[in-house]
Length: 68
Image (cartoon, rainbow, N blue to C red; front, side, top):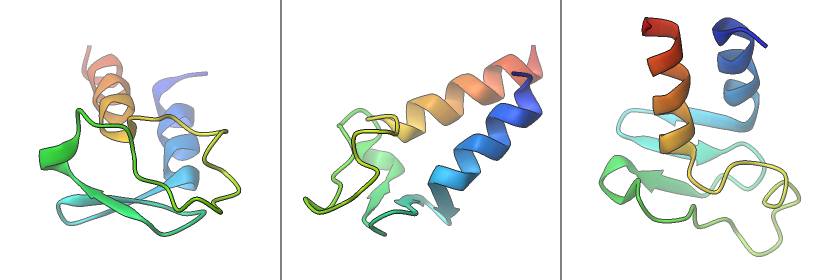
């Protein structure tokens, strides 16, 4: 999967809104200042076991690969 495809996949799972990332499954959010902590999904979130536990880190990795 290339960088563009990874970014599309990330964007299907997460929404970047200003300085927070939100899960599209439960709409819980996390500010960038808590990027090192596991994402605080709602307990009933259907996607919590299917997505990255640290979406900020995953986004950082995607962007690093794209930038080279």
